[in-house]
Image 1 (cartoon, rainbow, N blue to C red):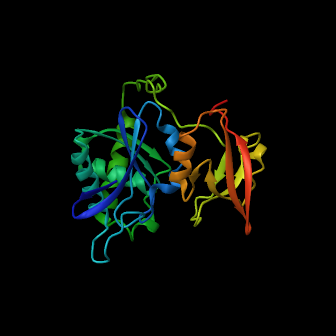
Image 2: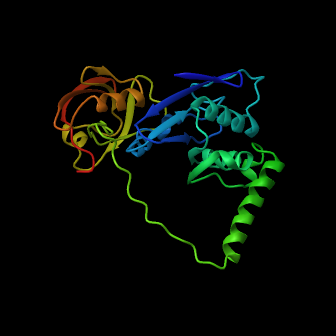
Image 3: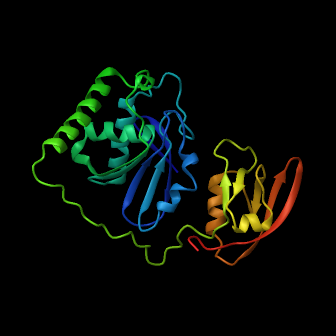
Length: 261
């Protein structure tokens, strides 16, 4: 669904149940689709809130609309208010990791937890996207953190956190097929770059380059459709999979498996 904040419409998507985690995709100018379906595996005992940042994916804006880091931070704060959450748990990937840090600097009281996955580095490459003042603030934050750790007299206290539990009655991530999706655009389906060894996909005869166009009764146009199709089935289900192989439609039969088995 779309959420209107600061005069722009942001496409949002939720996955899982439990404490909410806001996922920040890379870019700028990209979309969250390329994080799927892998990131959805984190939706076990928690709810993931994805959104396409302004100017990217399904959140396009006119050329006259600014898309600088301050606007991205302001959008994230507006989403926090929309979600009615006092403090956010953020998971940022690449540029999204940098956005998470910038949000922390602007609103330190609004961040409960911060997870950074391969965050964008503060290098010359990024200076065209984020102004010098922003770079200086991030550098000072990192330097202050490093100094605090280096001069700390007391040892750090490590806590063994229990693994997250599946929400009661949750369907989890769905049945397992074992394809490796191509994260680039594949009009008319989901192109795969290969299959996992011993997976239902491999046993069914799927191969690199195939474009999945249907799973069971569901037409597959993108990764969202594929994720929903797998969630609608259980391990052990036998499903018909239609793929486009070169110029030919090929019908294959797969017995879906269980994740982690």
